Length: 119
Image (tube, rainbow, N blue to C red; front, side, top):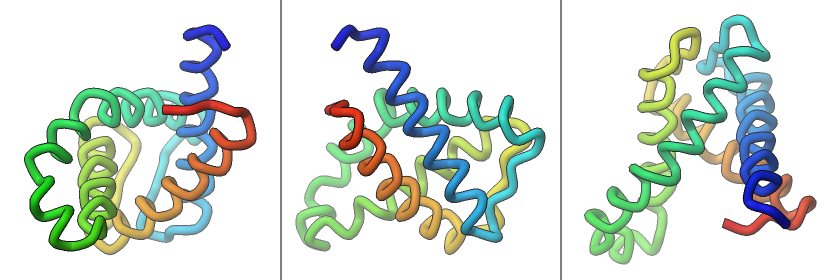
């Protein structure tokens, strides 16, 4: 699979995951749904690629102590940062961010598994 195809599939997985989360979590609001979803999916992908590994490395002792449960909080923080950066996306609070993090993780995993995309 080419890098461009893989990148496109990862973007599609983020967009689908955010769309599902927006439908299921009342605390997540996305204005002008499709254009904003595409931008939010791209920003989420960039944050996952550049920022998340640094945070995971710095928090590694706490991730180990919590048996990995802190990773959900890190994902929620990344989603909160994405909502802060993308106009038209809002999260009502930390609980909404946690719910979104769980849904986005599950949906992204399902989509990338179905299309054979690996991180």
